[in-house]
Amino acid sequence: MTETTKRPPVSVYAEMTPNPASMRYVSSRLLIQDGRLLEFRTPEEPVGVSPLAEHIFNLPFVTAVFVSNNFITVTKNNAVDWDLVQLELREYIQEYLNTDGRVVYEDAPAQALADANERASTHADAKSPEDEKIIRVLEEYIRPAVEGDGGHIAFKSFNEGIVTVSLRGSCSGCPSSMVTLKQGIENLLKHEVPGVREVVAEEL
Image 1 (spheres, rainbow, N blue to C red):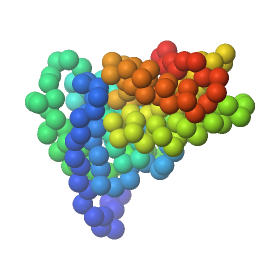
Image 2: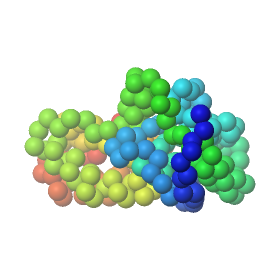
Image 3: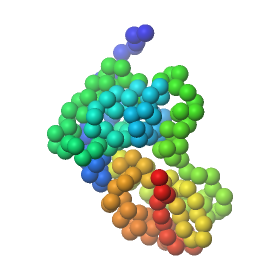
Image 4: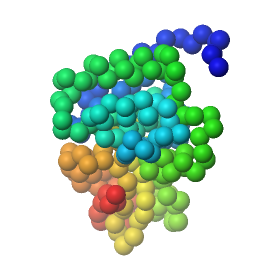
């Protein structure tokens, strides 16, 4: 079925991220409702769920696709340099958004969507006032900066002084994100939440 309503043309620009394997592609329109995140780490995972991610995974060098708000973070393998594919990938994504444009299939299975959202990861439920304060600090001070780098951070647990978080998108597997985790996030949480001794990333 063709769409009769005219949409304004979508423009896309590329941004480097702290992870040399990931590039952030920012769209001029919202791709997915705020709060929903999608992460796909194999070509099979988006099948029947996200035509956008399926389309991107058609490229042989792509190893992961992360979608949040108005951006897509694409992670590549070592077979090619970004210098060779960055512009082509930007045009490839932009052309798709201006033609098909679908991010999620209307009839995508609810469980598959939930799995993709869980991979991208939302905050675990707060079980104490300390948990609530940690989540508030992550939301106010840390998440905007992490999203600006094409990634996502979520609270997982707080036990015996150790805060566990999940890192997704460009942050996943990025060496510099570990430095940020220890020097930036850990220091901030130690300062804001009494009892925090350490911040660690959950094992994938």
